[in-house]
Image (cartoon, rainbow, N blue to C red; front, side):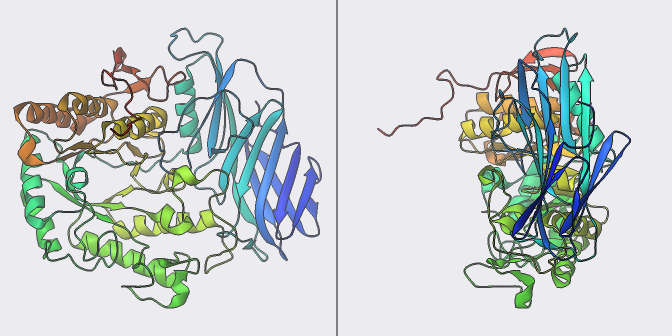
Length: 533
């Protein structure tokens, strides 16, 4: 479908809706303006006297027959990504693809994939709908759950992109479209891989255990030219999953000294942080003025407030000054909007609340938060977790693209890990490094299963992180880990899903041009139903 002006446009203001035709898009209460050039459509809004909420754009066109539709997710995916038959009410964040045929068939003659999306870092939370009669784009330009007060400012909501890709696989088409949406990715200048202690420690760790982990991963990677990372996850700070980030707890008495020791042992140190939380149940540890907190979530700091931006920047700088070369920041989408991505259908958040700064949209405020973290981190690598991928693209080197895998539950790893890697491989290197999460090794999942996930990640070309309890790593596990780390440290592999149009947990891939099949199930199939005895 070639880019053109929408057939109908609606501007949702506080208390009213303005409906426009294709040739008249202004009224005394508000205006939508379009700039159609270079195959892209830039959408702008003005409403000096009214709060702005939504823009709806509608293009009429007949549906192609025999197609399936792919959409993205609001933040991390939760095992729900996949190609589906046409479902008019389906809400697809950020971009969608419409394709015929199957990528299992190497003959791509006659195939066509159409892609619809918005360029990364828009000023709107965007989602698409596709039905038998046309295409709809919704642009959420609210401030929290209220109208944004633009005043005399003209808001550039975002740049809309359409592209047709004939004669190629759907995967190649979507990958090219991701590059079109994100022409300037911010990738790390080295391959990022290594260890993270979460999926065997689950927050119960110590400085001594981290040093043991460091010795373990350093030994496994001693022959690699590219040193690994050792990431300290939640559990080092005084309060679990919470502020403050000014010092370690009694088990982590010297965070700066620990980072120095880790570097001396041959790894790059990394650390986890939850930057905009402050206490719980009315108790606060940072204690900024009340206006610095969200009214509807009184333990979440409001990143639209200048004092909060300064606090976040100070927190990130402190971690890098301690010597940490990777910062994993977490929870910001949930902390701001009160929902996990799987709970967000059409609206990113409920109505009835707003940020301190009401003149900017939620998307603008989130992008500004990510940029603040990026700039404060200096040369450190940033991994976003529970962040909005379309808004952090070009600002973070890595993004945790799926919900948690597990050191306990193999089926959770398959559901979340395999699904997200298969359906977001097309974003890897185009938006950021796509981190599918860890291989959790604590003796609870049979190694014959877990090594499949390890092999898959190491052959995918995406960042490989492993959580391994050192004292359970026997000779076979050590051998497998050493080989996986060796391969991941260079990341020369290219993986392409083939049966992703037929399966939510794809099994068949091209790895460096060779067809490879992975087996994700035990002899009993998917063990998702677990009746009691």
